[in-house]
Image (cartoon, rainbow, N blue to C red):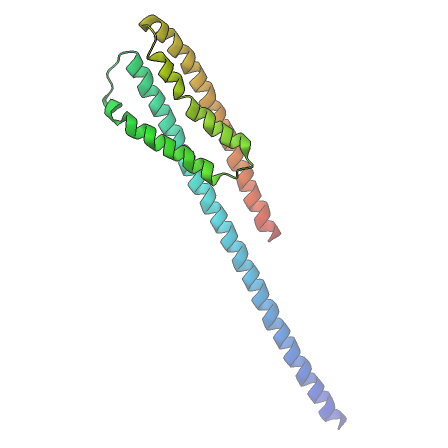
Length: 172
């Protein structure tokens, strides 16, 4: 009876080991799937935000160039498209703000600074031509500095976000 008893214990133990192996394999597989999904979605979010920021930056630059040329009396073929560009620019700024964590006030403020630059051109409408030319030179320096600052900030922002995605993936 001892051999039968030992055989029965070994059989039951084998069943428990097989069940444990199946459960642990399932758990590890689910955890790996979760990690891959979270990493892929985070990367997709970051790439989408990066595209919106690039579009926003290009639209800002284009709008400021067109407005500067208009004030200096130069003809510009994209003049009719300016309202559409401004609308798209505003939409991109809102999309960026919606995608960024509301606690990241610094990044939201950098976006707002670039948007605020549009209002600098409204003042120039009421100036004489000589005042306008001097004013636009000053505005040009401010626009360039603001866009450079925005670009550097966003590069740092994207690097921090990428590092965060990598560290989160390592912790999962």
